[in-house]
Image (cartoon, rainbow, N blue to C red):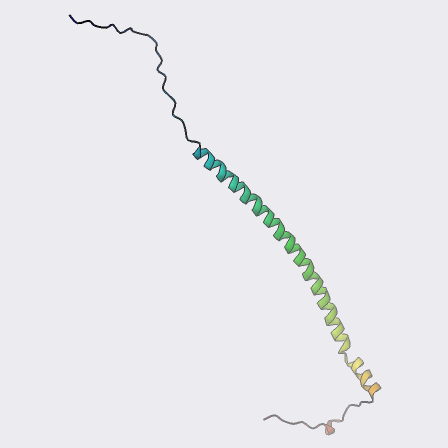
Length: 108
């Protein structure tokens, strides 16, 4: 007879498997994507604040320009008033012409 080997029976034996090493690249990608999104968010907030400050500055300039325009219109009205022009004409010795002295030339 051939020799047989006895295999010992072990009860409650726990089989330990080797753990597969996970790649770190998916986690690195998620971290890079999160960091990029945070940078984009901060950059957008900074740009928004800069544009709001520029809008406020331009509104102030617009208000100044409107006030200056109003002053210029008032000055124009004062300088082109009939009374002022009449006084200047009298100082220069100018007179109004009578209607019969005015000659009209028609354009053809």
